Length: 249
Image (cartoon, rainbow, N blue to C red):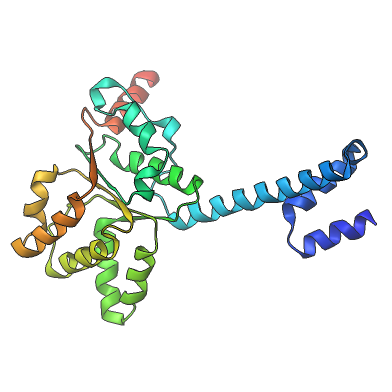
């Protein structure tokens, strides 16, 4: 009977239940549980299994640059990273309130790592997240407009609860990139959150976007309901390389 039950659980893809029931049979734990306790144990196991697989799926689909967590962040004072601020962001309320986060600072100060950590945290809270490098994204959207698949690409970005746009402003925007960025922001404005990282301070974004009227429209949508994080200090990659060299001497 137990073998048939396990087979049926597998066929119905009740993998959490299957694992829990199989373990209980091996340990004879089922003999110590009442019917209610056994039912609760099986349901909880299935719930946890589906929850974990959902998070794994969401995280994989996000395509993060780094496998980063909030716990791994470096809060040394010279970095300008406020632990209390990050802990407030970690609860995900900025996403439910459709707020943006702008992370700026010199190269190597951990902007992308911080954005990835917030993204992973959001995935754990069952939010849909997508990461994209700005230069590659706008090149892909340009090709998508040429082959007629742009509507699908914009729709994919629009449905994300959190969209992470990394390395914003590395290259000056051309007309096609400005138009694509404005369309993305228009779709998300007041409805979804976005995290933007950039080596450039916000006051220089106007210049790199170009074309006054479009730049005004873009910055109005970016800066509205935005929290800012400005990272400082030397490159973390440079410091890590220096430590490695010192350890090898």
